[in-house]
Length: 254
Image 1: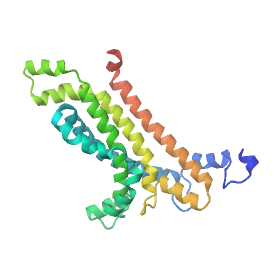
Image 2: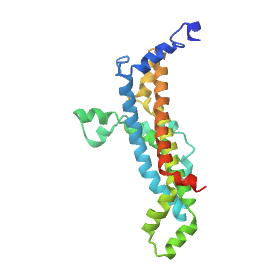
Image 3: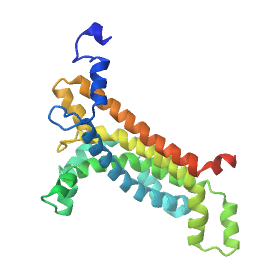
Image 4: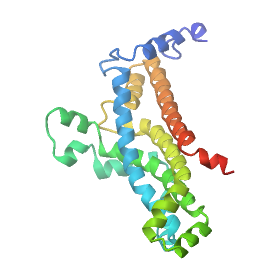
C-alpha cells in the first residue's frame, strides 16, 4: 500500500518505520532518541500512577468496609467518574500552568533539576485521574465481595479490627485490587499522550509524536505509536504474570 501511494508523509513504508524501531538509540529530529523519550514517559506514568494507587487503595478499602464512608464519598466521587481525563486539561492548566516538581521542591539547577523539571504537575495530574478510578472501583468491589461469615467468625474468635483488615480483608480483596491496578496502569498509559501534549512538555513519546507530525515525519509518528503499544503490552504482561504467580489459589477455589 505504501509503495502504491509513494508518499512518505501520508504512509511511510514498513522498512522506514522499523528502521526507527530497531535503532531506538538514534537521535530523532533533535529531540533525543526514541528510547530516551520512552523512558521519560514511563517515569511520568509511574509517578502519576503511584499517587493514584496510594490514594485509591486505602480509600477503596475503607469505602468497601464502612457503609458510612461509602455513602459520604461515593456520590461525590461518582460525579467526576464520567469526566474523561482530557476534559481536565483547561482546568489543570489554569491551576498548575507549566509548574513542575522542580518548582514544587524549590530545585533550580543541577542534574536533579533536569529530571524533576520533566515531571510537570499538570501531566502527572492527568495521569493520576486516569488511573485513580479503576483502582478505586476494584478496591471497593474486592472488599465488598469478602464473605461476611469470615469477618463475623474472626470477630467471634477475638480478632481486632487491624487483624480483620490485615489478615482477612486485604488478602481476600487482593486479586480484585491487583486487577484494578492492572486496568489503572493501562488507562494511565493511554492518558500519557494527551498529558504530553500540554504546554511545557519538551520530551516524552507523546510530545515526540506531536512534534514529528508538525514536521511531516509520519514514520516517527507511527514508530512512536508502536512504542506506546509495545510498552503498554509489556506492562500489562507484567501484571498478568504477577496475578498468575501470586493468585493461583483464586482459580483453584472456583
